[in-house]
Length: 424
View 1 (cartoon, rainbow, N blue to C red):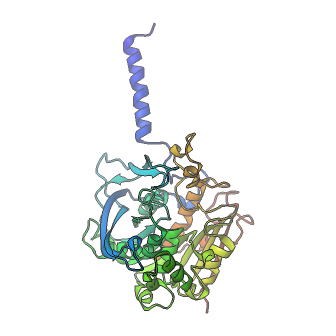
View 2 (cartoon, rainbow, N blue to C red):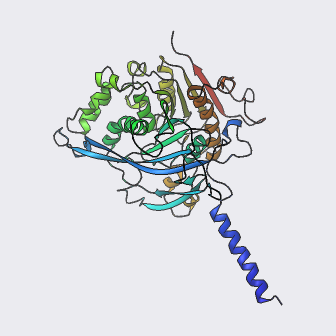
């Protein structure tokens, strides 16, 4: 017969083990799988994370335009910032992020809060030293914690990474598409300037002239415009039709002096995951020639949101005035950038799209995450830290022909990596 004291000891051990597993999950988004490529591994620095809010005052409230005339309002933007941190003794590099399923105003997909774990210390003390800045822009719909596998990873390698929660474009406050069309590039530049020039907890840690920008889907639409590519007159007409004649988006179009004046030479490079718009006439040859910054494009060959041959690949080919790369995941669709599906999205009875907001039909999303970490590390290291990663970025186009540099034997299949130089 088992003694009561022995039984209690066993139960306490079990409960303690369960609590330990909950506090420190075995696998967190972004952790390296056994076949992760070389540069996917986290860096040597500890990571802190903090949520801050910026307010961009007196902006055009396009959602409330009447007969083409829009009032002004203040755009409050929550920003999640990851940074190299000096952790105190026993300070855990573990955080729980708040996220939601569903979409505002969609009765079939109600808002359901949930949390997921990350490898960062909430509100930790920043490390000493100065680091390049990366600004991250999510899709429509999305959130500032949509790509924590990448944002944490980059911070561990010596970057300050700021991911914007774009007002009226997140799961929680989804609203009219015209707000995203107008505000996406403006939000990116505003947040960049606030971090580079404002008074905040990282004011002494950010390099003031060494910035990269990363965008996914509508974030890709935004970062390309910030990088010099002007939107087409087709977008201006479409936007005016949506807003009853308001023409405010013309400031972001081809050859507009206001758009030309936006270009900021502190930005050195772009990563564009599945950028939207080419198939919808948002971009054209003249506008794409305005792209002035080295760009790393990532796409799925079966992307049914942004399009591939006439979409992302056409943008890549048309941006002839800069050096650019195109990484293609064969048979992938649009979800080449986000975290993998959280466990809660797999529960029976939930709307299928909650799972397919993150998952890919032909790829393990965790595998895509590791490959993205590898190539984004190589690309940003090249253009922001003057590191030589040419062996990782210029190889045989088809990964099936030989094992790519940095990949384990037999593991680099199903991808293409193309490169085009700036036109002479």
